[in-house]
Amino acid sequence: MRVGILGGGQLARMLALAGRPLGLDFEILCPAPDACAAPLGRHRQAGFYEEEALRALAASVDVVTYEFENVPAETVAILEGRVPVYPHPRALAHAQDRLREKTLFRDLGIPTPAFAPVDDLAGLKAAIAEVGLPAVLKTRTEGYDGKGQFVLHEAGQAEVAWTAIGRMPAILEAFVDYSRELSILAVRGRDGEIRHYPVSENTHEQGILRVSVARPGDPLQGRAEELVRRLLERLDYVGVIALELFQVGGELLANEFAPRVHNSGHWTIEGAEISQFENHLRAVLGWPLGMTDPVGFAAMVNFIGQLPPAEAVLALPYTHFHDYGKVLREGRKVGHATVRCPDAATRDRAIETLRGLITQL
Ligand code: AMP
Image (cartoon, rainbow, N blue to C red; front, side, top):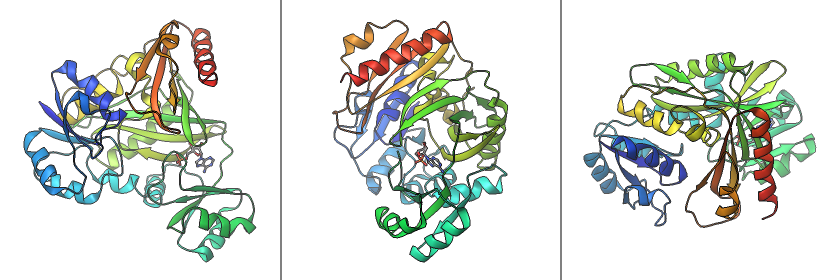
């Protein structure tokens, strides 16, 4: 079987690495000449609006999936009807627009921070009155890793905030004083079967994920599963999904979802019976889903902008090194390490050791 992937970054690379042992071949459509997934399959170096390349991809693969949520609607329109595309593109329309996404959560009874749409400066002032302060102004589209966001502490900052995000259609959200950031990854097969991974507890710095710790048996596991199930069923979703959540008291508030494999699930490569990457492929191909049970006490530490020397990481016990083969650049996710340990104390020490290595760079 041949799988087409839109996008050629590390997520596509890890999908291909997971699929090769299953006998799968990959075609990677990505305009970047140095796409880090390219060595794992056939690289179709083309843009997402290039109709000829998209038709050729559709003709030569059994299914198409994607590794990023900003796949243009035009791209999907060209592919649909020629080849199955999973997850179904209807998920993209919601994930690409924070207002639609939050409105969907609200329709599904999934709690969110208070929010209001913002279309101009006057609208921002009205939204501040409605949502309260502190609040975070986010562009509706094209924001990721904390980009296109501005935190407001006082109403006098409205104009600065509006300019800072580029005077684009936006959403104002209450700034949540959360105790933890969690995500739940789940997979739904073509037949509607759903499986969940244990929730991940995530630490972000400057809006970028730094550390994810798998939390099997977390008291909020059941609630997280219930929330993500509503989303999967409403979207008739196929594949892996990630729902990002804030814990406030004993409740979870949804921040956003990603219709794809997710950075907070990289620990599943070594720390779960079957990884998020293999399960995503199984789902989009209509194959039986794999077990999502945790193996040991797992966590992941991201390498951002810089990589520690391989020898230093490889010398650590219980530690697995992933180098994405990318050119190093500030703010870029260039690799990660997973730890899979026999107990929680060893895991926490391993995380600290890795974080220590990073601060030495
Ligand atoms: P996002 O791009 O929406 O995932 O936001 C990136 C990060 O900013 C999140 O992981 C949080 O750490 C923080 N953040 C986003 N929205 C809020 C909010 N409403 N309240 C508090 N922190 C937030």
